Image 1 (cartoon, helix red, strand yellow):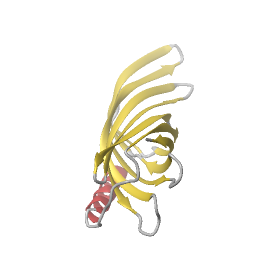
Image 2 (tube, rainbow, N blue to C red; image 1 turned 180 degrees about the vertical axis):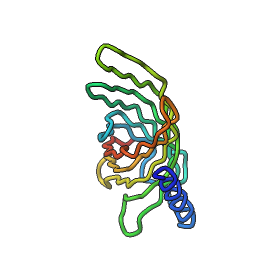
Image 3 (cartoon, rainbow, N blue to C red; image 1 turned 180 degrees about the horizontal axis):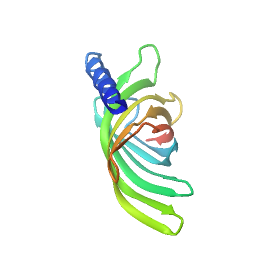
Image 4 (cartoon, rainbow, N blue to C red; image 1 turned 60 degrees about the horizontal axis):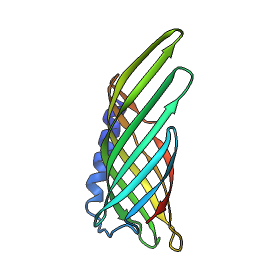
Amino acid sequence: MKKVFTILCLAVIATFAIQFSSKAQDYDNAIGGRFGAANGVTFKTSLGDNKMIDLIANFRSNDNYRYFRITGLYEVYKPIQNAAGLNWYYGAGASIGTAKWRHFDNRSSDLYLSVDGVLGLDYKFVDAPINISLDWKPAIELTPDTDFDASGVGLSLRFTF
């Protein structure tokens, strides 16, 4: 039920977002770190107008579980009026990676695949080459298990160029 609700919410947001006017975000490229449920590196590049590609390489681990994954997201940016440098964005993409488990003496490894969504806020400092964003990146995991992962909240800090 959570999966259906999340998909419906993202579809409604995307539908209404198309109706708003847009302008391009305030930078062409940015690279930095992403911190949250999983930590990693993020690189964003502009596709022109108000669209960007965000590539994320991240990892998560605990005593019994580790994964590494690479995510590609297509994002659409919408400016927030009367707030220079502040945009909200939405998008979708996919992830691929590896997942490894350790249970006592047993170890296993699997391919990780997911379909990802993203919804967030993005701010580019006017007088500095710094960008910060806060987003939620839910994922529908396809392998090794079919599941919904809503833990993808992240804060990214990037250098823009």
